[in-house]
Length: 247
View 1 (cartoon, rainbow, N blue to C red):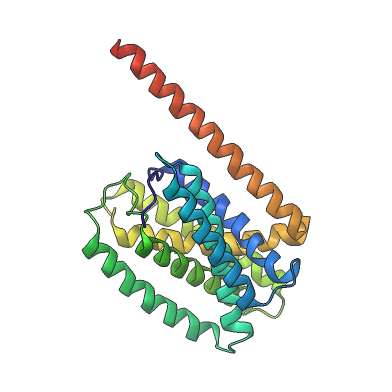
View 2: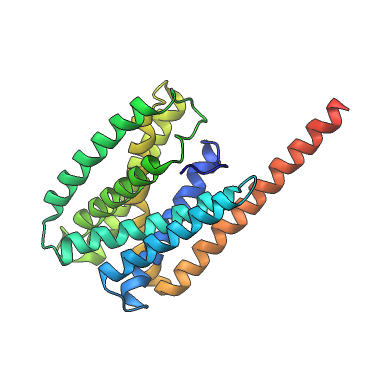
């Protein structure tokens, strides 16, 4: 199972996946808070949605990048539920869950490096089953880090904004390093994803607190859709211009 069409990695990709992280955080919280579903039932629902999406993508002739971004939202929502279940229901500590997820992610990155082609600055790792399981693990780790830091203070109204600020600084640093150095690898890609999930969890929680959970999910989802439509229109215009030059 590998998605036919995937985006190229670049500034617009990181902006899009950051917005998707915000929306996915809220979608993950909607499952227990608005839909009143248990963690297990929510994960079964999200897994079913992902499987149906993958089947629909395979049924198309040429595929579409839209399938990739919907999958990102589903996986991000599932990561939120996994992180919440690990802490709230399984009664593990944030440190224990973070350590376990970090170890699993490290093993998955090694598998990605061995099975995939040598990465380039604009190449996305193959969006196969291993990729999506790694995305789920990275998303869960970023969520646990965000919640762990945010809840380590006496008040979450203090801790969450502080954690969001730390994540923002970390995000700018890691993206700056990727842009200015030769550190373009599978490891750097997944490290960036973890930081984006950390940032998206805290900022998504802040938006949900200020706007309401449903409104925040709707606004961030609409923002992602608009960005992707603009992105698609620009690429279509560039392709059309190139064809005219060739003629």
